[in-house]
Image (cartoon, rainbow, N blue to C red; front, side):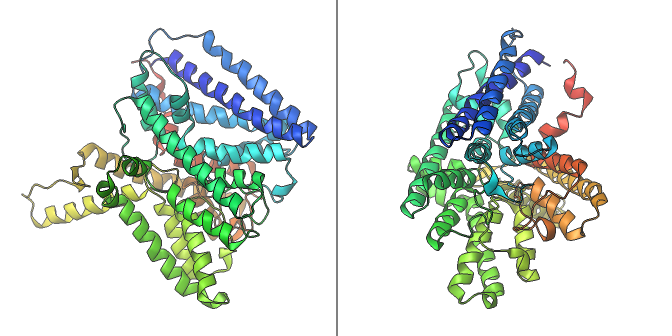
Length: 482
């Protein structure tokens, strides 16, 4: 194992994080929030100084294998969460460091689960930093590094890092050079974010709110700047967010296909068609179920579309308290929590791509039972899926279930209801944010014990990093030299 290259990349990430803290400090300076300004600037300086360790341990060999890729990814996300929590703690805005860590992990993993009961009490600079963690974590902090930093020799081996961080059963390059792939992904990401800001401004939303809301939508995170999330904004602004949440849940390679005029390939993408099929079916079912609760069917459709788009893309914004909706609608939303968005998007969940693979592999298994000597392979979009991908998919699903069950049992010592514990874990491991009962859209996670918050923080990191990188931290063999 190449420990020096691991330390180098983690330090690079901390340096990027230090720079990202400065806009928040500038915003606090503008609003004369002196404590928040000094906290953000001080943590930025301290983080930058800590990142200078990379010059003391320069690696001779910069090649990165799968082993280093998993550890770099997991350690980087833990490191940025530990340091990113400091401004909240140093400023005194959130007194408990465990709460600060939970809030920051929730931000970077684009979960949107919060311990805050009064979001609007936070200084503007900290509100900006809180929302920006969504945007930075949405596409991935390491993908961002690949897009903006030239790593020199051995950079192509960073594909192992990108595969460890990017969501989905398999990750490939869009173009031959990995850094160009990262730049293309981030160019699409930035363009969609700016486009949403323009639409929100056109609807009369203030600039600060537009930027922070777009960060939360782009990263499919859900941190709002108002206590009622997006409930107080106009139907037009809510509809804009509905559309953009759905767009950010699409595999970004499909946007690349559209930009390169490969329209047929984009339209017939099986994952995207299944994604929108499930979404539209869920909207229709919930609209039918909740229409007696609203003045007319149009209003019910509006709220159903918003919540389905929010939950399926694992964004977590809300316009209504769906905790009060009928049991059928809540069951549909919980199911969407588990399914999630497309692979290669900023959304969470087990991903529609895995659902597609599981269905095709199961169907093949049934055919083999009927015809034991038959030879069949799984195809997606006309391409054969390798057996390793299928094995990894089922391994992921097994670990997903085991971690979910273990987490539910561990946090149940806090004596909340089964509905609270179940949906809290599902909301965290699927990077959604709001659940049901105590952790519903009008509640928060502040009542959980420190131990439960740490467990849920692990769930958020495991869910965002597809489980395997986080597990590698606890496997001794992963730390041994080859």
